[in-house]
Length: 347
Ligand SMILES: [Zn+2]
Ligand SMILES: [Zn+2]
Image (cartoon, rainbow, N blue to C red; front, side, top):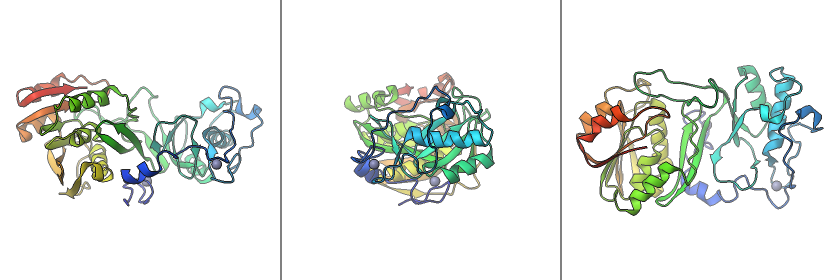
């Protein structure tokens, strides 16, 4: 059991072993759930004749509701509060992110606190109202800059792009079933970009191919811009001897630590935190060693500029450079080329 770093709840972050046990039934209709037809997303919602109360459409057996019904209740509240026009349609509400990203065949059936909402037009008071009235909502985030502008820190010299967490909690996990193992990667969605790692993602395939070719076994691997730690922790499970995970963005470092803990059974490690994150700058410069883990693999977690990390690490076998969306990798790669024995992998 872990305490959520954002809201303190014991239910936000679960160890992967626990998720695996329940993942096949997550968000899946029970045998009593009514086979709801999806609602019309394009038509003015108020013309659909939907009852939008907190218990409308709830299955009496499992207590869950169809995603569309939950979003309908949210839209009803937004229209009442004046934030959406009376003729708004369900497609206008915003983006629902399920608390645990798993591959789904049917639209999700949601239980308590199963969705983080990302909305463009929302204020704190209404966000708190939505959170209080709709049991399935776990957190409400206000988005800035449209869906094309990623959240987080592009580079150390730049301003981070942030969303606002207006109510509840924004920590959510994405489940990744890969050739090297099953993981769950947690992050705070108001400060780190939404990156649903579909199991056939190109980046995942690159790591799996390296694993199959034996390019990671026994190696020292650097994941220089690790974000939530996905690729570095995959390398760790793929037989690397040592993995160094680094990010300049403090929320990413927090995420990496959480993800080592959540996946520690697969990784076969125990985590040792060397210093608290409080008091550290949100944007790192000179790399600082934050934590290490040892067991089946040796892990080191740094907070700092990936260019400067090259001067600290001095040599490695494989270096993974996965820059922020839209950032060129050349300058980062230049610092690692001379000290990486096998290959610098840019993604
Ligand atoms: Zn939480
Ligand atoms: Zn049911």
